[in-house]
Amino acid sequence: VQLQASGGGLVQAGASLKLSCAISGGAFNSYAVGWFRQVPGAEREFVSAISRSGGTTHYADSVKGRFTSSRSSEDDTAYLQMNRLQPEDTAVYFCAARSAKFFGDTYTPLRHSEYDYWGQGTLVTVSS
Image (cartoon, rainbow, N blue to C red):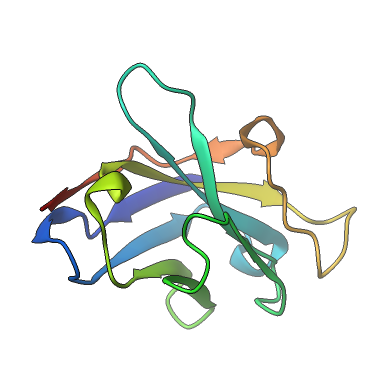
């Protein structure tokens, strides 16, 4: 299973970005997808997770109300819409996938250790 994250960039505070995570080599609808971010010297931080059906999502408190996870089986891609970006959102963003075969349609892992497959990361920089 391969994950390709894209969509990062340099924006000003208050702007929006939409990250994409294209998944190939596996059955897209069998995977829960998570988003994490990391800054140098810090632990990888949970941002959001979406279940394989797309019907269940979870968000970190720091992004709740600003970020939205979605997914499309038409192009086997998960998305993270990020609105009202702030300088503290600056980080490398990673997408990850975990099979939900044994966990059901609402499975949304919150810990990075639960994920089996990772994308390469995409840098988001928010200037003040």
